[in-house]
Length: 259
Image 1 (cartoon, rainbow, N blue to C red):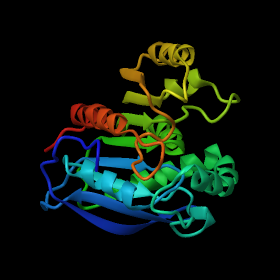
Image 2: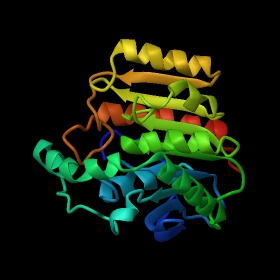
Image 3: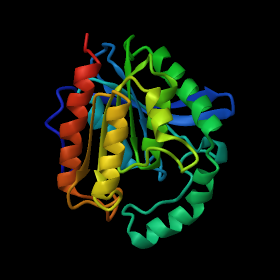
Image 4: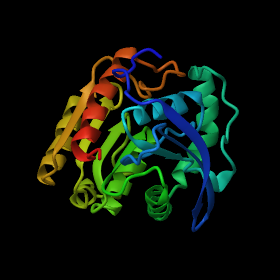
């Protein structure tokens, strides 16, 4: 894949899983080093397009750096994964068709659902024999980034690293950004698409992060559009994905100690 991180030191395994939640059972998969050891856990929320080869490749690459990476299907209430029959390459037409079906599901994904799932997903993660005890990281792309932020706020004593890429931070104007950030204790990285955020909006967001006293880096990735990390879409930027790895892996390494 173009835009890869530095070569990960570990070969990895992939396994399909089922996560029990208060609202049903979520399909999921995990990627982890093939060395028989336990490694720090990372909960990865994908974009709304869900489980597909590019997401599995990214999870495996991250796992190769020494992490147990759990990727749940957060739209499990609407059926087993994958919900959509996506083409190998998602162009503008395919994206429009998919989002027509997905947007009503995302709009119905309430804060209460997010919090119930956060508890279920993190509890499941920490129970896995390949996952080490201790703090975890949470990572999200697009709508999954919003879920990652809410998860970090819900479990501040457990989530030590938070990253989101081309993602909203709060779902709508009815929720206070300052109140949400006040619950987070993790180190935060937010990588924004140039098409998603104006410099003025970035300054406002960074002011809120500063005001919450968070260790953070929040920046716009130049010359990118929404979805730039996903190599199976026409939004993909090889440079953007490379910068994504350059920010993400050190963030996790700083906050999730390897035993």
